[in-house]
Structures are given as structure tokens and as C-alpha cells.
Image (cartoon, rainbow over all chains, first blue to last red; front, side, top):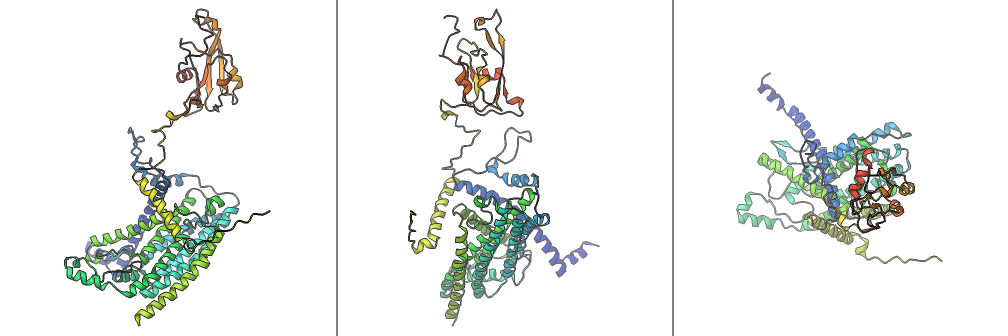
Length: 397
Length: 176
């Protein structure tokens, strides 16, 4: 076969879709697992700085091993590789009396859902005409809810299969916590459907590009790069951005945003809601009995969940990959790369915020956690739906 | 009788957590910002920076042997330290001092004097019990070795660490 024929075969719609999807999946998976490693390092470094310590600052390029005189510390960046290597080379100890099948299954169940969530998140506009979403499906947001709820099985099974008291309590806590926060998580999203009129995350992002991010009430209408050269058009678009509807809708959107953010914290077992691991009360929580790669899977799963959760927050509330003025990928591949960069930058900001929160707030007591979920967020999220409906009805008619 | 502790009445702002959360975030942000510019970090970079200058005089580091200002080994091999040592870290092999030696009237000195630093508990009883003021706990605390044999301080090492001790008893001084 000559090259023209191969090229023709590769560009037939179905084949093109298949191999680009595989490529996107492969690249995104590797990038995200790399980002997880960086997040762990950032977590250690930020926590150290907040507590007036230096954090890891030794492991860099080991020149002494290669015959050099002095190591290059490189601000401890080598820790990103050293930590996984340590976990991988440890003995994978399986205690007697555990349910072996489920004991091995649980870490995989924790790792899988966050990676599945990444499939529906639009992490960029388009590159060379290829859409930067692995699966652009109409029920994107529902898919996220369906899949993230599955990660509770991994944790509960880990707790149960360990055949030990503390992991079991951790698993139980996790399941009840997930149920209480899953509800407000789902309800807090309904106002967004009402405003945007779609469940497709790509369309929600498109809506935000046209009308402004959901957390930003004011947005110049039709703002673009060309307009910067024409002051008259610029002023016109700035005035067109003022809209009573958007300012009124900003209130329920902010409420939704706060509830969604807090629920994501609870979903990903981050402090102040890390009751399932609560190392002071439950030794290590659900992963007490795990070691080596099995433990690393939990670790990886937790941070991948953080990443996926941040991705969802960014895509739904913070305009996804879009930045004001910056055009999308159809104007050239450079802009496509800029869009991808913008998405990762926004996600990093949310990740840093999660770390920042972790080292600021103490853990909630268990009854406080339940009370906050059922008596706080659940009614507020319900009320928020009605508020949005009233605003929409009053302003439109 | 049980003491009733009245719960404080919380205002709405306190009940909804948010102001306190923002105050806390502001505090941690302040620390983070300060540490980013390398200020306010309290960590001591150990092997490069040490606390040695601030060690008190009574610090109990590694036990060592000393010589007096005339260069005589102060230890007379009475073996009291060997007997009192709780973890039995000290092993002494005494020897007679030859007739032609300058210090022959001292009668004995150690031929071998080993302190196993893997066993030493730094209690200082050897220093207290020594009638000759020959053994002292100095300020060395970083005793390392790659195997057990390296952790044993022999006589040579002990004298090297101990050095000269001046201004104490002189009962074996020739001039007396």
C-alpha cells in the first residue's frame, strides 16, 4: 500500500475518530498521572510552607551516584520520582484473614472512576480540527455523577475486605458520607441546567464563552481579539455585557458553586471531610492494611479524584478551557494549545486551593459532617433550584 | 456535682463557618507567602547547619579518654567504669607499665580500651565513677559506622576525641 492510500484510510471519519480517540486517551492518561505526582509534591511543599518548614528539598539529580562531587538538589523536585519508586519497591504485604479477591480488587475500583470522569471533560477547544474531548456525550454531567459514586465501592470494599476494625469503620463512614454529599452535589447542578439548558459539558462551556463564566456575573458581549483594535466596538460590547438577568442569576450560581465545591471536597475525601481515613482516630482508615502498590493505587486514586473533581468544577463553573479574548482552536493550533494550557492552569489553581484548604481547616466531627450535609446543603440546594426558577421566570416574562 | 458549662451563643456569622474559614485561609496564606520568600522558616538544615555552638557545658555526648598536660594517659585501668557501665559497653584490657617508662610508678595503664558506641546509652556513670578523672563525656553526638565493628571506639579514637584535660588532680605528677 502506498502512503496516499494509508492517509485516505486514516482520514475516513470512523477510523479517524477511533485513532484520534485512542491517542487523546493515551496522552491525557499519561499527563494526568504525571500531574498527580506533581500534585503530591505540591501538597508536601505547600503544607511545609504553611507550617513554616522547608519541605522536601534534597532529592534532585544524584550526582554523587554518577561520580560527581555534589548532588544537585533542584528544590527537591526529584521527590516526585522518589516517592512512587519507594512505594513500588516496598513489600506488598497481604495480612492473613483478609478476603484476598476483594482485597486486591478494591484499589483498582478506587483508581478507575476518576480516570473515567476525565473522558467527558473538555480539556481544550480543538487541535488540528480534532475536538479536545475524549467523549463528547450529551449526558456528560450525569456520567460524572454516575461514575464518581462508584469510587465509594472501592473504599467500602477495601474496609470490609481488610477484616480489621478501623478500616471497616473507615469504609462505613465513607459510604454514608458519599450518600449525603452526592445528593447536594447533584441538586446544586440543576440550576446550571436550567440556565444553560443542556447536560452536555461541551455545550455548557460554549454557553459560558458566549454569556460569561457562571461565577462571573458581568461579561462583555461578543468580546474578541479584533475588538481591541476598535475602541468603538469595544465600548459597545462592554455596554452590551450589562444584563440584569446575569446579575440576578449570579446569586444562585454562587450558591451552587459553593455547594458543588464543598461536595467535591467530601467526594474526594479531602480535609475537612477526610473522615474515612481520619488518621488520628482510625489509624489509616480504609487503607490501613494496604502497602506497596496497592496503597499507591489508593493514593493515586485520591489525587486523580482531586484532579477529576477540579476538572469538573473548572468545566462547569469557571468557563472550561476558555479565557476572555483568547480565540479557540479553529483560529490556529497555537490557540488550541493555549486553550489546553488554560484548562490545566485553572485546574491547578483549584488543586492548590484544595491543598490550601487542607492545611487550614481542622477535620469535622462525624455528626457535624452529617448535619452539614443533610440539614445545611441539602435544603439550601433545593431552595436554590426554586430561586433560579423564579429569577428565570420573572426576568424572561 | 456536675459543672454545667454554658455553650456560647453564636452569631449567624459564626454559625455559617464562612468568616472563620476566610480568616483561617488568610492566616495560612500569610505563612505561605512568607515562606515562599524564604522568610520565617524554622527548619534547620541539619548536616550543614548545626546546633553545636549552643550545646550546654553539661551536655553528655560520646565518652572519651583524656591525657593530662604532661601527655600522660590519665586512665590507670582500675576498671571501675567497666563494672558500672549499665549496658556493658566498655571493655578494658589492663597492662603493667614497663620499668623503663617515664610513668612507671603509676603501675598500670590500659593496653586496650574499647567503648562499643552501639551499646553506649550516654548515661555518664563512667565519668562519675572514675577516680582518676580520666574519662569524660564530650559534645560529640554524631557517631556513625557502617557495621558493628566500626561503632566500637578503640583506645586511639578515644584519646583523639578526648584530647588534653588541664587543671585537675596531679597525684601522679613527678614533681610532687
